[in-house]
Structure formats: C-alpha cells, structure tokens
Length: 201
Image 1 (cartoon, rainbow, N blue to C red):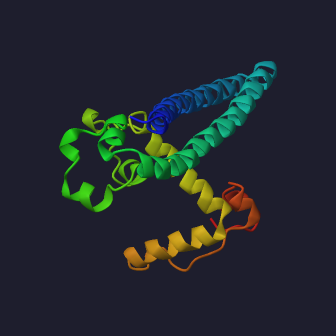
Image 2: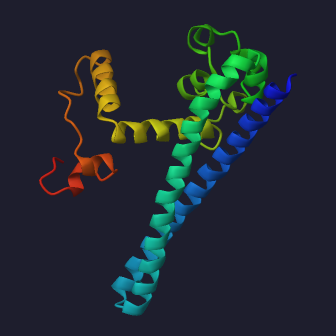
Image 3: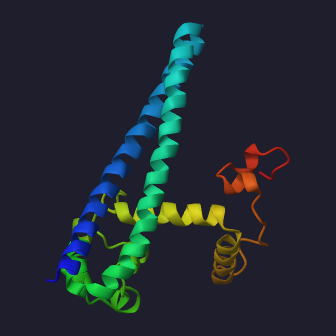
C-alpha cells in the first residue's frame, strides 16, 4: 500500500472514531438537558427560586454546548464528503469497504452494484457502515448521522440546495410537499418558523 493510501485509511479511521465520540457526547448532553429540565420544574413547583436559578443556568450552558457539538457533527459530515472523493480516487474498493466495516455479504448485492460506487453512497445512501452488527442505532452508523446533519445544515443555509431537494422530493412523492417556500434568514440560522413572529406553524 502506498503512503497516500495508508494516510487516507488512517484519516478515515480517525474520522469514524471522532464521529462515534461526538454522537455519544451529543446524546449525553441531550440526556443532561432533559434531567436539568425535570429538576428546574421540580424547583419551580416547590417555589425554590434559588435552586431554579442554579439549574436554569446549568440548563442554558448545556443547550449552548449541544449547539456547539452539533456543529462538530456537521463538520465531520462535510469532511467525509471530501474524503470520500479522495478515497474513491486512490484506494481499492475492498480496502475502504473493510475500513467502513461493511459486511462482506453486502459487497456484491444488487443495491451495492447500483448505488455503492463511493464511500459516501455506501455510508449515507445505503447506510452500510458497521453493517455486520445489524444494529441501526446512530452510534453504529455515526458517519451516516454526520452526513445527514451536514445535509440538513446545507439545506438551511443554501436556498438553491433547499429548493432542489424540495422539488426532487415533490417529484418523487407526487407533489406531497406542495409549493416551495423560501426560508427566511432566521430559519436559515436554524430558528423554526413557529418561533418567528408571523411565521407559519
């Protein structure tokens, strides 16, 4: 194996490790937020203003950390898109399928022949990362989750991509999503329409 190929395999392994860790941290933070919300509600019900203030502070800090962690997931997804192209250009198919822990029984299936030409497709479309486990939990498919987060972020920040995906989905599902409505600048920042004054529910 050439130095370039070894470097790409090592980078893929590191990226998968980072994805798995940030998915785990993201989940733990969500659990912490739910716990702090319960404690805040108990303090409020007991009219314990001091405890409510302390717990609310922890809650706010946890929510801010969750936002930060989600951007890490997005960055991993974006990096994997670029890495997938390099891997496809320089690594034998067998090497990257092994590195993604794709079950050998999946390597020559019809769906793999049609859609599994790149690491990106195998991970984000076919969702075959760690496929030997037969477990669909996001911790087993961390790169797929990161790619999904990156796509959702891209849709929020790019009107052109958002419209293209909306129209493609409409075509596939027979117009089920209705006419495209451009997102407002606040919606593109991730604020739901329901929280924007005058926004549609």
